[in-house]
Length: 415
Image 1 (cartoon, rainbow, N blue to C red):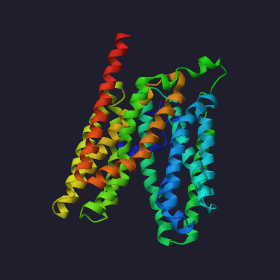
Image 2 (image 1 turned 135 degrees about the horizontal axis):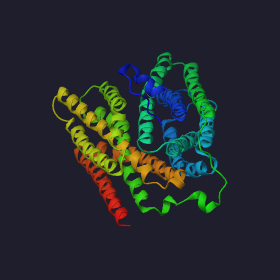
Image 3 (image 1 turned 180 degrees about the vertical axis):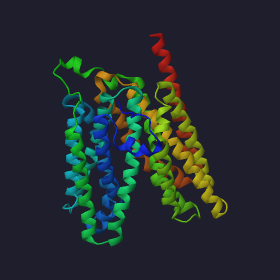
Image 4 (image 1 turned 45 degrees about the horizontal axis):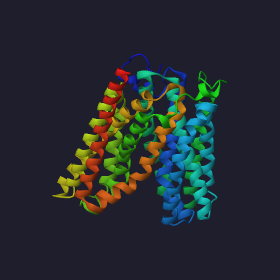
């Protein structure tokens, strides 16, 4: 459905941006615009909040934490809304709503108003992720479904990087109007991202059926799915380890120059962009997905050891250790994502795709929310011992996922 005819390398960009399937094409261009918005927002938002809007770092921290909690519930609720009204309609509504919420940041001046707007923005972003996953689950099957997810991930990474480059202009100018224009751009790009979705055809919308038939099985009664979600929430903490833990570790525990941090993040982006689709193609069955997550847990444990080793030795040795750790971390990321997507799709009841994807996205939101706290209270506060604790956590989560898949296969075959 999503795959195009095999062509020379020259057609590589076209395969990503202009897939044959109309739904995949709409999702791709919507992702480009939305991810450009994220790149700009990630780069300028904190400075805008503190230097232009006048909030303290504490205000911002508390506000975003509360918004993160709201995002967990929003991700869950979006699944049921998608099942009732259709994933595309929900995605359109919350994309437009988040665009308006981002524009509202320009006029908030009190901490309470900031919390309200942050909850609206972060909550609707969480709802977007659920609606997107549901739309993919309902529009594609098998390998096509995982490959669509992988290609969108690549488009997301590259577009965020491009958005960061755009934000550099505002950061270089450094004036209040420049920051305000950058924030307004994030809102405008999100609204633009809704246009391809509004024009797509061929999406299966909900039909009028008895309620018992419409909802299917509840994910809250599915112990296998809930366990897989909890384990993947642990694996999701790797993102906080990279974006929060590694910068703090490099700055506070190593002698490596601070410029090493963006270089490591760029290395991660390149690896994920080049190899995410490859990893997805090798994790399209339940067993291969479980194995991929187990491999990811092992690689994350290795990365933790290398990060810890970067606190010792000469500066050149530290930099090499950090690079090797980032490479292991990046391979773990693409494997865990590919495996996690397959498990989230294949373990779900197709009749309740929205509800199941809502639970999956809520689990990821919990992992993302807890990651900074977990990483800082282990590795950053306790050094090598903390990295060892993180390594054990990721290794146990990865191996437990494979064990769960094996149990599920055996239970299903004997049923």
